[in-house]
Image 1 (cartoon, rainbow, N blue to C red):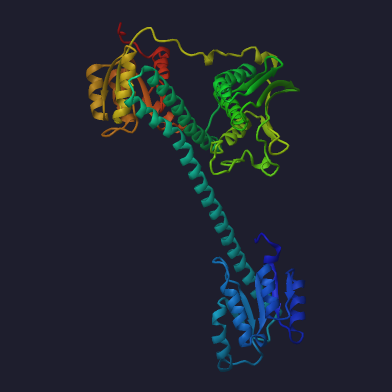
Image 2: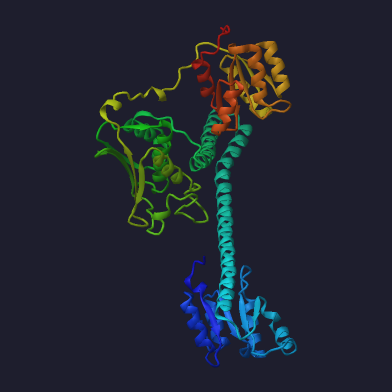
Length: 521
């Protein structure tokens, strides 16, 4: 169906006699929307507003009228081919009609009906033409949707390019500076810059992937009793440096422990995104207020800032994907408009709600998260040990890295060797399997996309040959739940998504009970 009621109108151009009035009366009785037009000029004006069909009597079509109508129809959009029903003069023959038919060619989509015509035949012709016209409207909507999608895609790619280049630029500068400087202090500063920007890059990629997983229903929460106040305070503490650098004043209030049934990793994403959002849009020297309270059977967290604020037009769309209030060319605020979408989706998965409030630009904003509270019995089982960082390993391992990317392979080898592990490497699947069977390492770090033999095949062969004595860890850029399932089915013990932190790798060395071979001392 068309989106505009005017688009379904039937224009009737029969200014002489009673044809026009009778036709309009018949169409109206049939539930259609007829509009009588006195001349071609009136018909063209009505067509500009919208119409599904034009009905004309042959007497109207003098050469000047045909030229004017043809000129109007030439300006139709590509999707449009207006149907025209032309009623011939009574008693017309093929010979007498020939000149009229030649004149009608510029009009395009014309159906000629001989008079006298039965009412049922006319109504059938009208309804058939309107159905065809509605298919044109469907094409129009598809084109509009495609244009919007292309525009949003191009806008997103431009934002993505901007956000990726921002951290890449200081990384390249820091590397160049390290090459040119022999100062340990300068190198230390450069390393911190690189580390900070790499974490930012990782966050961009993770946010994009998480939005995709959440919106497609491929994310599964690992829920347990969780103390929300401590979680939010941890997030604030981790962003203390960012707030200090902008000289922001932070105030935190709480009503004590608030226990919810939550996934700690996902709720940290919610809190981190909302805190970062407040930091981003609050000017230097501004104020942030975070409050946690019990309201009925809900835990309520409010993130308030006195920064840029949100317009009333933007408020209903602020959680939509790729939407940002700041659309200026310099994009000084940064971001791709995925963080708040992720917040809304993750809160909804926890059976909660999130809303944004603001009195307008320059008045600050407040984001409020509401999550169901657990009852007292369930709250007693709250376990905060999941966030404790694993202690450093007291023993060292024999490790084999199978990775085709030379830089990744060498850097990971250097890091592990500096921490006392004995490391061998291979650049492809077959070589990796041969080395594993020869050296019998305690730990294998295996990429999935290997030349010669993929990581899954490597894991199956090594597991079959060495059994449970080896810890198999997949280290890969494939991070979907399906990828983890396939890794476990192939024989891997753990699955790590690139980029990996060395502490995470060593943490698996410590936690695993699969390693039974003698350790290096």
